[in-house]
Image (tube, rainbow, N blue to C red; front, side):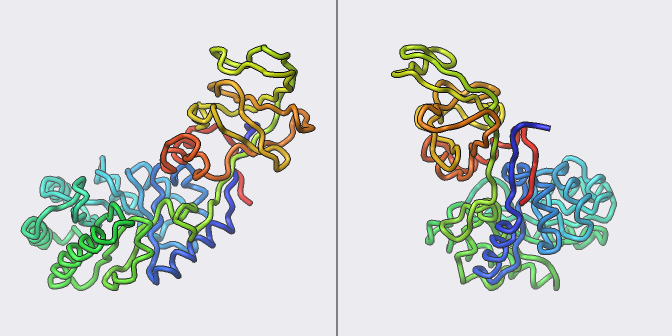
Length: 344
């Protein structure tokens, strides 16, 4: 047990999921990689279990964790799979984007579901040409143990409509080719911003990650906050220092409170110049350098006591502005937080 709590708003998560589905008029694949972007993938999966039929994660370990919770949904490994036999054992779908991977699967000679990734411009993973795609499909057709369950691509800059429409057009070409060779498969596309596009009728699912957790324009709302407690209060006199390296020097007699969350928990040190937390719904300033395990706040102007609740985090957008980091970096930083997981 910890002093601090990571609180997930179950109602808001389901509301976000339904908003995304309604807005896109498509099925939603919940991307829960990196521990659901720091939100706790197991809890998110349990909440979505009766609503979501398709999950995507980065690696096999993450996939198996979800499979233990949801026995029915598709669980896809987006990255490279480290053990295809283990994927078969847990009915995990895997990504293929080159012939070498496929040859490894053929040698295994076990039934497996695959999704073929297409590179439409991001130039990271995925098949690059129609010829590669056709050659891959033809080789798969010789092996009944390999099922093409899906084909997909990733849109890397959905705010740029020109680039995104070009990607959609390129991907549609690959989907149409597969339709001539296979009757049933899933065509899916990511990321979150694709729910705002209405010209992708050939798509079955949209993969959504960050948008599901509340960070997609004004469409969805954050579902997580992190709360802790004051564990100590004391006074320092004018011109005394608080914390490491003489970073903070009191300009007056100051009442200080210690909160047991630090950079080891995801409270990154870039915040220490201008960051506030909330005590009794009032902003209070962090003072001194953020430590590994604790941070200090100035409570001179507010009545507070030991064990009073402190809301350390409730909006990654605010933290991003304060730190210069991305919302993605901030949220995934909470993967290491020493907190109790709570639902509301």
